[in-house]
Every structure is written in C-alpha cells, then in structure tokens.
Length: 242
Image 1 (cartoon, rainbow, N blue to C red):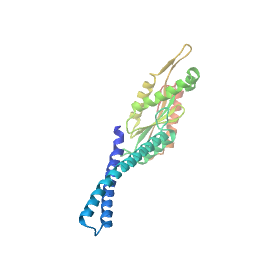
Image 2 (image 1 turned 60 degrees about the vertical axis):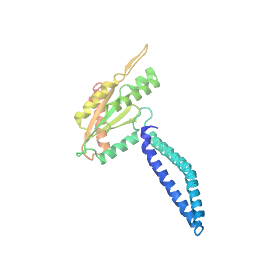
Image 3 (image 1 turned 60 degrees about the horizontal axis):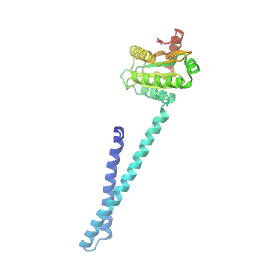
C-alpha cells in the first residue's frame, strides 16, 4: 500500500470497527428483548450464539464495503487530478491554473499578499514541429513541464496555458525571485537539443515577468507579463523581460 493511501484506510478501518460494534450491541439488545422472560440459561445461550454469528457475518461484509468505498474515493481523487492536469506537460491545465491562482490571490500565503507571474513561451516552436515532427514537439512540452516543476517551490503554481505557452505563479514572490527562477528555467531548458542531417534545434524559451500588489486580478498582471514576453521575443528570444 502506498503511503498516500494511509489517510483513506485508517478512517475506513475505524468506521468498520465502529459499525461492527454497533451491530453487535444492537443484535444483543434485540435478542434480549425477543427472549425477555425466557429462562436465564436459555437467554444466555442465545445471546452467546448471537455474539458469535453477528461479528462473523458483519465483519467481512463491512470490511468489504469499506474497501470498496476506499477504492471509489481513490478513483474520485484520481479523476479530479486528471481533470485538472495537462497530460503532456504534467502541469495544471489553463482553467485549473487560473482558478488556483485566483484563489491564492484571494487567500494569500504572505501578509503583504504580493506575488509574481512568469509568462513562458517556447521559441520557434513551429519550426521544431516542421523540422523534427510532432513527437519532438511533444517531447519539448513534456521537458519544459519537468524543468518548470524542478525550479519552482512547493507553494508555487505552474500550468500550461495552451500550445507552447506556460504560466508560473510565485506566491509572495517579488521581482528578484521571479528573475532568479526565470533564469534557472531558461538555462535548464537549453539542455534539450534536436539534431538530424538537415537541421539542428536547441530548445529555448522567452519569459515575461510581472509582479502584483495584494488583490490585483490575474487578468491585469497577465497582460503586463504578456507585453514583457513580447518584448523578450523582440529582443532576440531566449531571454527574460520585466
């Protein structure tokens, strides 16, 4: 059993034991009421038999039903994760990312409520697909997702916004942190290279940065980051603009 399943199993086991105990007590009470007035020895024998039969039947059934409930809960968690995740990059999909970012802004993790947003776009991505095929493009998307995950903190958010565009939200981040993480991402992504007899391609990204004050809506600072991304593209790509 995986460690992450323990939080599902323990409550289910406790619930099963509680239900079994309740069933046993209820069966004993019903038996006592039914045989009320009968000779004590006869009642004692019946109560003893009831005390054996009830848990013998109830325990396997209750544990089976509890295990089925655990499996359904796990499946529900997996489906929720799949619904919010971009399969290719392993990051949040656009809708889930923006919702999570909006929620983080409404419930900031730092007293000042500030944050930073990175708008990341793969350079010359169409050329990569044209020269090396869509499998290479998929590999690049997957690689970018891994690099982003490796360079952000546990409190940060990352998502694929569409195509070759990605977003990173740094909770409580400032311009200095945003530049540092952006530069690490930019450098690490250049490690992926494609080469054949006709073409050579090094994966690079351009990054636009925007910071925001407490309560500022994502649409506002994402526009700023988008303008800075365009500036990075205009400056020759494979660079950062803020």
